[in-house]
Image (tube, rainbow, N blue to C red; front, side, top):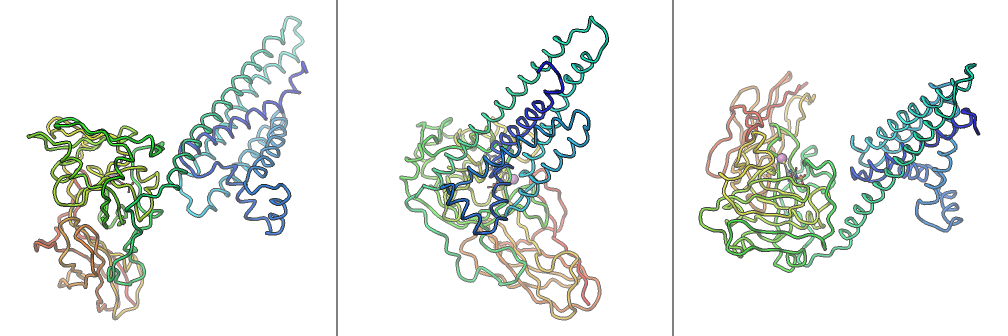
Length: 511
Ligand SMILES: Nc1nc2c(c(=O)[nH]1)N[C@H]1C(S)=C(S)[C@@H](COP(=O)(O)O)O[C@H]1N2
Ligand SMILES: [Mo]
């Protein structure tokens, strides 16, 4: 095989391997549930008529996807080698082949129950890997070929040939490294996911939605936000995967006694539970960065009291396993409210994306100053001595939530029948509470809405009102009133530095 032509299929095979390995690594690191190949395997299983799938599973005597995945890999190897050969004379045909393969991956991924943009990243990474590696190897093969065809007796094929083999070896190493990274990352994820599934935390109860919290209007967010629908905000490109047995929280700084808590130490304590609404400072007026869940955890007041904060301390600098930080007012962690080290969300161990195994939840503060996910370190300190991740970037040091309200029905731009119209939504002012919600049509008089029940002052409240609307285009606004009788301001402020203000407004048309 001293002839360059014979090596094009190998180049194709290597390019294919690199792309697959990189996409596997990307899937594992980004915690995409499955690599594209596994997603394709699942897609094939789903599309296979029940009988055939059952026959295949019985015949191979295995219920997992391994056989199918292996089969797909064998088919892919043949296709990759063939694409490599094709690339010799018809470069664009090979590229089209890659795009078709990536297209199958995209299809398999987007037809999953809850696809998101991140899920596509592994496919994109894989496609890039194929194209780049094949281009590099093809370049060396072409030089080799030129030398072969040259009439010049001084031309030495050895040299270019060696270059190709070095490049091929490096490619194989990249593929192996990608595969290894993927393996390690997906193992870590699997271990954390497994220990999470097996966890039974004494004292954690299943949520029971209180009576009367819903106004029963379709289109209004469910009062309890399911974990899968709960908004997610963090800076962690790669989510920490911490097994509970490996978790430890260190509480230190301006304290009388430094504390180190293991997961077992933590959950041995009394579990507190409550409904708490969490929202993000970057939530625009009318935005979706808010959710309400049944949180279970251990109250921080008692733990911090045990550590004994020294006089003059007014802040706790929290650090997560991935190095994110936030500064939380010490008072908010120690007063009567349910500030907690949460271990469960809606009755289940925290999902990895929401901070497994332990995160902080503080009613009445925006997430960026309080709700540290994957929390591992708490330093009792003073605000004038610290900066944290977001305060360094210009966000406010203290982040108490602001009163807010949102119209969810009708939607902006809706067409509704003229006459009686149901209008509904949510309002919130955690740890202060909402006493009234008012809506206004076309700048007219403010009309009171009916409020649904709430179990405490830390959750959002649903509201509804029936309005009489004339045919034509209208503008609807909402504002809330807190339990001290203060009305939500209509002054418009941007989310930076400490949260948006202004009345949520929707336009609709009645006819
Ligand atoms: N470790 C870590 N914790 C974090 C963040 C983060 O980037 N990293 N973001 C915070 C912000 S800005 C918000 S609004 C909440 C969001 O929590 P959720 O993703 O569980 O909804 O987490 C907070 N905790
Ligand atoms: Mo946030």
